[in-house]
Each structure stands twice: as C-alpha cells, then as structure tokens.
Image 1 (cartoon, rainbow, N blue to C red):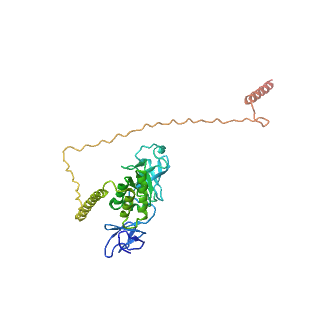
Image 2 (image 1 turned 90 degrees about the vertical axis):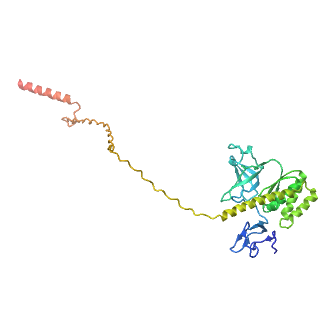
Amino acid sequence: MSRSNKDITVPGTIMNPPGEKMQAGNGTFWNGQDVVANIVGLRNQRGAYMNLIPMGGRYVPQPRKNDLIIGIITDTAPSYWTVDINSPYTAMLHVNDCPWKVDFGETVRYLNNGDVIIAKISEVGELRKVYVSLKEKGLRRLESGHIITMSPSKVPRVIGKKGSMLSMLKAYTNCRIFVGQNGRLWVDGKHENILVLEEAVNRIEAMSHMPGLTTEIEAFLKSRLGEPSGDYREHDDRRGDRRDDRRDRRDDRRDRRDERPREEAKPEPVEEPKEEPVEETDEPAPVEEPAAETVEDTVEEAPAEETTEEPVISIVGADGEPADDISEDIKEESEVKEVIFEEEGD
C-alpha cells in the first residue's frame, strides 16, 4: 500500500514512516514504538500528529470540544427542551442556557417541536448526558433555509484544507452555508442553487476517499453553474496566511516558554515574632476586685399543717347490731336509771 496522505487504512496498520517518530492522533494509538491504526479510515497527517478520518459512523459528542452543531427540537418540558443532534444520544437545552428569559412552563412560546437551532455542545457527562447552549454570538434559531444531512465522519472533507472546499461551494452557489460537526448543513439561497449544492455534497460524501476531490467538485460546479463571481482562492490564501501567522507566533511563544530555565522556588524565611519590651513602673499593679456574688432569693415553703384524725367509736347495741342513734340510747338508759332510783327511794 502506498504512503499517500489519503490512503485507506485498516486497524493494525503502522502509520508512521520507517525511522520517523510521530504522535498518535484521532483513530490511532501508540504501541511503544509506532503509531498504529485503530479504525478503518483515511490517513490524515497534521504536523507531528497522525490522524484517521473514519469512513463512517454516527456523531458522538466529546467532552471539552465545544462542537457547533445543528439540532432539531423534538420535545418540550416546563424548564427545558429535548434536542436531536443526529447522534445516539439526545441533548438537553435548559432555559438557563438560552438568551431569553423564559418563565416556568412557557418554553413552547420560544421553541417548539420541529424548530431548528445552531447550538454548541456545552457539557458531556460521564454517562453521555449531553447539554447544549445558545448563549454565544451566532447561536440562534433558524428561520429559513434548507437542511442537508450527511455522514459526520465526512464533514472534514466538506470543509477542506484551510476551508478551501467550503469557500469554493459558497463562491459557485452564492449560498450561505453553515456546517455542523454532527453532519448537518444549513444552506440558504436560490432554490436551483441549493439543489446543485446538495448534489455536490452527496458527491463529496461518496468520493471522500479519492485523491483530487477538490478538482472533481470544481469541474462539476462549473458545468452546472458556470464561473463563480470573484476569485475565492485569493480570499482563502489571505485567510490561510493569517491563520499560519497566528499559529507560528503561538508556537514561538511556546518554544520560548519551554526554553526558559525554571528557577527552583526558594522557601521564604520565616520571621520570628519579636517580644515587645515591658516598661517597668513604680506604681503597683491594680488589684482586680472580686465580683460580688449574687444571692438568689429563696422562698421558704411553709410547713404543711398536720391533720389529726379523730378515732371513730362504734357503739354496738344489745342485740349485737350497731346503734343508729347514740344519743337516743343514752337518753333511754338515763331515764331507766332515774325510775329505778325513785322506786328504791320510795
């Protein structure tokens, strides 16, 4: 197999040329000696990194990448929207991540099912829970235009090196184009030009592994739409030169920072606290008077009066039963005694 920049590579293929050290990029890994392919894809060398462009597959959002995507609202809730991002995982757009002040339960007033948005991947959780945001310049709801869907792995071929393919498509079709990293393209322009642009995108997707793709697509556009208005290559060259200048300045700053000797941090001396001199005076030190103790008023409880219970005397009559009326029994007995005394006296 030849070592061209767009070779189709299978897993297990050694990517770096013999005797040349390279770093593993997307779709590759380092086995200790060489860079080895991990998937089926196209070789794409960028500087010291060896990458692989996948031949197919779904879009999988990655953490800390902040991809710009085109999403479609599929469901609404009182405080968030569910977004289809052309991925095995659905995304969530919370009301706090949109530029409007949305009251609870009024999400339908701003976005409804079927609305198309340009959003940014703001967070990807450990369980692939994806969140998107609209709180940046250019992120918005799309009011017009047409959506073209393609394989997410072929998006780099639509953009081209330094944006060359995308600039050519805009120049020939005179359409506004936004390419989402999730494999959706938004285009807006004349209807006949949009049809030609969609056919060109399908050709790019089918011929992405072939060399000379840019020349082939340019010939197709020229045969259908004629010469473009203006020379788009000059604009691409100027933009590419500015990008290269920025990259070179960034690399120079990084090299100077790496070459700068690192000074070991010296421990800072610890200052011992100084004792303040005590002034000697002839006056005696003031004696603190003890605080007066507070005497709590105590209330003595009065002794409880003792109650003596009188004994109950029960009187039993001659018949053995208790007498009901004691006074009557005593009076009768005294009368009997008086009668006896009178008879004896007589």
